[in-house]
Image (cartoon, rainbow, N blue to C red; front, side, top):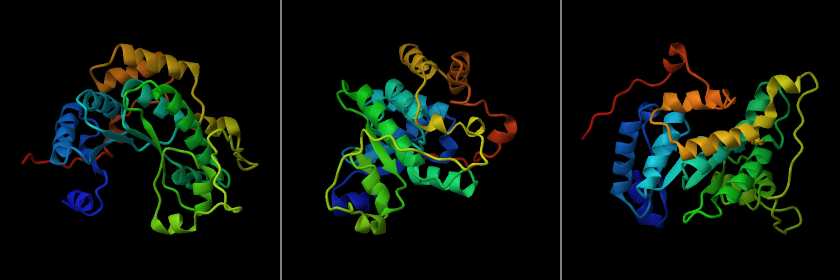
Length: 258
Protein backbone atom coordinates (compact mmCIF):
# COMPACT_ATOMS: atom_id res chain seq x y z
CA UNK A 1 0.00 0.00 0.00
CA UNK A 2 2.80 2.43 0.84
CA UNK A 3 4.50 1.64 -2.45
CA UNK A 4 1.34 2.37 -4.41
CA UNK A 5 0.98 5.70 -2.61
CA UNK A 6 4.52 6.63 -3.68
CA UNK A 7 3.75 5.67 -7.28
CA UNK A 8 0.52 7.67 -7.25
CA UNK A 9 2.20 10.75 -5.81
CA UNK A 10 5.50 10.77 -7.69
CA UNK A 11 5.01 8.44 -10.66
CA UNK A 12 8.38 6.78 -9.97
CA UNK A 13 9.61 3.22 -9.51
CA UNK A 14 9.38 1.69 -6.06
CA UNK A 15 11.31 -1.20 -4.50
CA UNK A 16 9.27 -4.03 -2.98
CA UNK A 17 11.42 -6.18 -0.73
CA UNK A 18 11.00 -9.91 -0.28
CA UNK A 19 10.54 -11.02 3.32
CA UNK A 20 13.81 -12.16 4.91
CA UNK A 21 12.23 -15.55 5.60
CA UNK A 22 12.60 -16.21 1.86
CA UNK A 23 16.36 -15.62 1.73
CA UNK A 24 17.11 -19.35 1.43
CA UNK A 25 13.90 -20.51 -0.28
CA UNK A 26 14.08 -20.29 -4.06
CA UNK A 27 10.58 -21.44 -4.99
CA UNK A 28 8.75 -19.27 -2.47
CA UNK A 29 10.93 -16.26 -3.29
CA UNK A 30 10.15 -16.58 -7.01
CA UNK A 31 6.46 -16.95 -6.19
CA UNK A 32 6.29 -13.88 -3.98
CA UNK A 33 8.58 -11.90 -6.27
CA UNK A 34 6.11 -12.33 -9.10
CA UNK A 35 3.22 -11.41 -6.81
CA UNK A 36 4.91 -8.19 -5.70
CA UNK A 37 5.65 -7.18 -9.29
CA UNK A 38 2.12 -8.00 -10.44
CA UNK A 39 0.66 -5.46 -8.00
CA UNK A 40 2.07 -2.62 -10.11
CA UNK A 41 4.04 -4.01 -13.09
CA UNK A 42 5.04 -0.65 -14.53
CA UNK A 43 6.60 0.67 -11.32
CA UNK A 44 7.37 -2.09 -8.80
CA UNK A 45 10.95 -3.41 -8.68
CA UNK A 46 11.45 -6.55 -6.57
CA UNK A 47 14.28 -6.40 -4.03
CA UNK A 48 16.02 -9.77 -3.70
CA UNK A 49 18.67 -10.39 -1.00
CA UNK A 50 22.23 -11.19 -2.03
CA UNK A 51 22.45 -14.84 -1.05
CA UNK A 52 23.25 -17.94 -3.14
CA UNK A 53 19.52 -18.67 -3.32
CA UNK A 54 18.85 -15.03 -4.13
CA UNK A 55 21.17 -15.19 -7.14
CA UNK A 56 19.15 -18.09 -8.57
CA UNK A 57 15.88 -16.35 -7.71
CA UNK A 58 17.04 -13.21 -9.51
CA UNK A 59 17.93 -15.15 -12.65
CA UNK A 60 14.51 -16.79 -12.76
CA UNK A 61 12.64 -13.55 -12.14
CA UNK A 62 14.63 -11.74 -14.81
CA UNK A 63 13.95 -14.55 -17.30
CA UNK A 64 10.26 -13.81 -16.72
CA UNK A 65 10.76 -10.09 -17.22
CA UNK A 66 10.49 -9.08 -13.56
CA UNK A 67 12.76 -6.12 -12.68
CA UNK A 68 15.03 -6.92 -9.73
CA UNK A 69 17.18 -4.89 -7.38
CA UNK A 70 19.74 -7.47 -6.17
CA UNK A 71 20.74 -6.19 -2.76
CA UNK A 72 22.54 -5.92 -0.21
CA UNK A 73 25.86 -5.72 -2.09
CA UNK A 74 29.28 -4.60 -0.92
CA UNK A 75 31.82 -5.68 -3.53
CA UNK A 76 32.64 -5.55 -7.21
CA UNK A 77 33.15 -9.30 -7.32
CA UNK A 78 29.66 -10.13 -6.07
CA UNK A 79 28.16 -7.64 -8.51
CA UNK A 80 30.27 -9.04 -11.35
CA UNK A 81 28.91 -12.49 -10.60
CA UNK A 82 25.34 -11.22 -10.33
CA UNK A 83 25.51 -9.27 -13.57
CA UNK A 84 27.02 -12.18 -15.49
CA UNK A 85 24.72 -14.87 -14.13
CA UNK A 86 21.42 -13.19 -13.27
CA UNK A 87 21.37 -9.86 -15.15
CA UNK A 88 19.50 -7.93 -12.43
CA UNK A 89 18.10 -4.50 -13.09
CA UNK A 90 20.20 -3.05 -10.29
CA UNK A 91 23.15 -4.06 -8.11
CA UNK A 92 24.45 -2.16 -5.09
CA UNK A 93 27.47 -1.19 -3.06
CA UNK A 94 26.48 0.20 0.34
CA UNK A 95 29.53 2.39 0.49
CA UNK A 96 28.68 4.26 3.68
CA UNK A 97 28.44 1.03 5.62
CA UNK A 98 31.84 -0.12 4.36
CA UNK A 99 33.53 3.01 5.61
CA UNK A 100 31.75 2.77 8.95
CA UNK A 101 32.73 -0.87 9.37
CA UNK A 102 36.44 -0.11 8.94
CA UNK A 103 36.28 2.88 11.28
CA UNK A 104 34.15 1.21 13.95
CA UNK A 105 36.48 -1.80 14.11
CA UNK A 106 39.67 0.30 14.29
CA UNK A 107 40.86 -0.99 10.92
CA UNK A 108 41.39 2.52 9.55
CA UNK A 109 39.45 5.72 9.12
CA UNK A 110 37.29 4.10 6.42
CA UNK A 111 37.87 6.94 3.98
CA UNK A 112 37.26 6.04 0.33
CA UNK A 113 36.87 2.29 0.89
CA UNK A 114 33.23 2.30 -0.16
CA UNK A 115 33.86 4.83 -2.91
CA UNK A 116 36.62 2.68 -4.42
CA UNK A 117 34.47 -0.45 -4.26
CA UNK A 118 31.51 1.35 -5.85
CA UNK A 119 33.49 2.74 -8.76
CA UNK A 120 35.21 -0.61 -9.36
CA UNK A 121 31.83 -2.31 -9.39
CA UNK A 122 30.43 0.30 -11.78
CA UNK A 123 33.25 -0.38 -14.23
CA UNK A 124 32.84 -4.16 -14.32
CA UNK A 125 29.04 -3.98 -14.40
CA UNK A 126 29.08 -1.49 -17.27
CA UNK A 127 31.47 -3.66 -19.27
CA UNK A 128 29.49 -6.85 -18.70
CA UNK A 129 26.07 -5.36 -19.32
CA UNK A 130 26.99 -3.36 -22.42
CA UNK A 131 25.38 -5.92 -24.73
CA UNK A 132 22.27 -6.58 -22.64
CA UNK A 133 18.89 -5.44 -23.93
CA UNK A 134 18.26 -4.07 -20.42
CA UNK A 135 21.69 -3.22 -18.95
CA UNK A 136 22.25 -3.71 -15.23
CA UNK A 137 22.65 -0.41 -13.37
CA UNK A 138 24.95 0.25 -10.44
CA UNK A 139 23.57 1.87 -7.27
CA UNK A 140 25.88 3.80 -4.96
CA UNK A 141 23.93 3.22 -1.76
CA UNK A 142 24.10 4.52 1.80
CA UNK A 143 25.68 7.87 0.92
CA UNK A 144 26.23 9.69 4.21
CA UNK A 145 27.96 12.92 3.24
CA UNK A 146 27.73 15.42 0.44
CA UNK A 147 31.41 14.82 -0.35
CA UNK A 148 30.66 11.17 -1.13
CA UNK A 149 28.16 12.24 -3.79
CA UNK A 150 30.92 14.27 -5.42
CA UNK A 151 33.47 11.47 -5.07
CA UNK A 152 31.34 8.89 -6.92
CA UNK A 153 29.90 11.24 -9.52
CA UNK A 154 29.19 9.33 -12.72
CA UNK A 155 27.63 6.19 -11.22
CA UNK A 156 24.26 5.14 -12.60
CA UNK A 157 22.17 5.66 -9.45
CA UNK A 158 22.68 7.10 -5.97
CA UNK A 159 20.58 6.71 -2.83
CA UNK A 160 20.91 9.21 0.02
CA UNK A 161 18.91 11.11 2.65
CA UNK A 162 17.53 14.51 1.63
CA UNK A 163 19.98 16.23 3.95
CA UNK A 164 22.94 14.74 2.08
CA UNK A 165 21.48 15.73 -1.28
CA UNK A 166 21.03 19.32 -0.11
CA UNK A 167 24.73 19.79 0.70
CA UNK A 168 26.18 17.78 -2.20
CA UNK A 169 28.12 20.39 -4.17
CA UNK A 170 31.57 20.28 -5.83
CA UNK A 171 33.98 22.70 -4.21
CA UNK A 172 34.57 24.52 -7.50
CA UNK A 173 30.95 24.28 -8.63
CA UNK A 174 31.75 21.92 -11.50
CA UNK A 175 30.65 18.27 -11.48
CA UNK A 176 33.30 15.85 -12.76
CA UNK A 177 32.90 12.13 -13.41
CA UNK A 178 35.04 9.89 -11.21
CA UNK A 179 34.31 6.65 -13.05
CA UNK A 180 38.01 6.18 -13.78
CA UNK A 181 39.22 7.23 -10.34
CA UNK A 182 40.93 4.67 -8.10
CA UNK A 183 41.01 6.00 -4.58
CA UNK A 184 43.77 5.11 -2.13
CA UNK A 185 42.48 3.33 0.98
CA UNK A 186 44.69 3.38 4.05
CA UNK A 187 44.43 0.90 6.89
CA UNK A 188 45.58 1.60 10.43
CA UNK A 189 49.31 1.12 11.00
CA UNK A 190 48.62 -1.70 13.46
CA UNK A 191 46.56 -3.68 10.93
CA UNK A 192 48.07 -6.43 8.79
CA UNK A 193 46.60 -5.98 5.27
CA UNK A 194 46.78 -9.74 4.68
CA UNK A 195 44.47 -10.35 7.64
CA UNK A 196 41.87 -7.85 6.43
CA UNK A 197 42.04 -8.47 2.65
CA UNK A 198 40.22 -5.23 1.95
CA UNK A 199 41.05 -5.65 -1.74
CA UNK A 200 38.25 -8.20 -2.11
CA UNK A 201 35.87 -5.23 -2.10
CA UNK A 202 37.10 -3.96 -5.47
CA UNK A 203 39.15 -6.70 -7.15
CA UNK A 204 37.63 -9.38 -9.38
CA UNK A 205 39.97 -12.36 -9.72
CA UNK A 206 40.31 -14.73 -12.66
CA UNK A 207 38.90 -17.52 -10.48
CA UNK A 208 35.78 -15.45 -9.82
CA UNK A 209 35.42 -14.69 -13.52
CA UNK A 210 35.69 -18.40 -14.35
CA UNK A 211 33.10 -19.20 -11.70
CA UNK A 212 30.69 -16.64 -13.15
CA UNK A 213 31.11 -18.08 -16.64
CA UNK A 214 30.53 -21.59 -15.32
CA UNK A 215 27.38 -20.61 -13.45
CA UNK A 216 26.03 -18.77 -16.48
CA UNK A 217 26.58 -21.77 -18.76
CA UNK A 218 25.41 -24.42 -16.31
CA UNK A 219 23.02 -22.97 -13.75
CA UNK A 220 22.79 -24.90 -10.46
CA UNK A 221 19.36 -26.00 -9.32
CA UNK A 222 19.99 -25.28 -5.65
CA UNK A 223 21.81 -22.80 -3.44
CA UNK A 224 23.89 -25.64 -2.00
CA UNK A 225 25.10 -26.62 -5.47
CA UNK A 226 26.01 -23.00 -6.19
CA UNK A 227 28.05 -22.78 -2.99
CA UNK A 228 29.77 -26.07 -3.84
CA UNK A 229 30.67 -24.66 -7.26
CA UNK A 230 32.26 -21.59 -5.67
CA UNK A 231 34.37 -23.83 -3.45
CA UNK A 232 35.36 -25.99 -6.41
CA UNK A 233 36.57 -22.92 -8.31
CA UNK A 234 38.74 -21.86 -5.37
CA UNK A 235 36.71 -18.91 -4.08
CA UNK A 236 35.06 -20.33 -0.93
CA UNK A 237 34.82 -16.93 0.74
CA UNK A 238 32.53 -15.64 -2.01
CA UNK A 239 29.69 -17.76 -0.62
CA UNK A 240 30.82 -19.44 2.61
CA UNK A 241 29.08 -22.57 3.80
CA UNK A 242 26.86 -21.63 6.75
CA UNK A 243 26.68 -24.06 9.65
CA UNK A 244 23.55 -24.78 11.63
CA UNK A 245 24.39 -22.14 14.23
CA UNK A 246 24.80 -19.45 11.56
CA UNK A 247 21.58 -20.42 9.86
CA UNK A 248 19.88 -20.23 13.23
CA UNK A 249 20.29 -16.46 13.16
CA UNK A 250 18.00 -16.25 10.13
CA UNK A 251 14.42 -15.28 10.91
CA UNK A 252 11.98 -18.15 11.30
CA UNK A 253 8.84 -16.05 10.74
CA UNK A 254 6.56 -17.75 8.23
CA UNK A 255 4.48 -15.90 5.68
CA UNK A 256 0.84 -16.77 5.37
CA UNK A 257 -0.40 -16.98 1.80
CA UNK A 258 -3.35 -14.71 1.14
